[in-house]
Image (cartoon, rainbow, N blue to C red; front, side):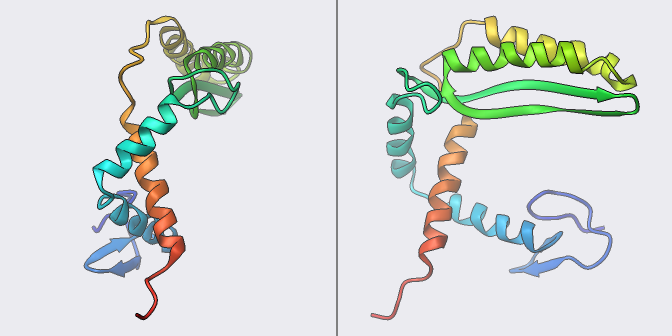
Length: 166
């Protein structure tokens, strides 16, 4: 069975084919094009943008950086329906710690009310707790931020369209 070149999901019927690759649908095809362009972005351009973001003010509070992607983990349960995941936002470490503490409170209030919630709530609480209270290495940037910058540059290139006739 073929799998999507972008999301790696199994394709049961049809799919969209492009350049020898198969995608689930047009949405995955478009994302695959962006990722293809993103892989060709020069490292120096990525490094410039990365440095500007890291040294810039926090987009959440306006405070000093370094700015990076911050994760918080949540879970919401209601009887047989449980949803859990990770929320990612660009912010300074101080805002990231606040977000993780709010994540802990959310999990404690909303996580226990389902079967899966009894299992996953302690896990999400511990992920937030250890993330909030461990000493961050402020000199290291997350790989996800670099990838986010690459994708942003690729989307800008695609929005400009192909070069016109000379």
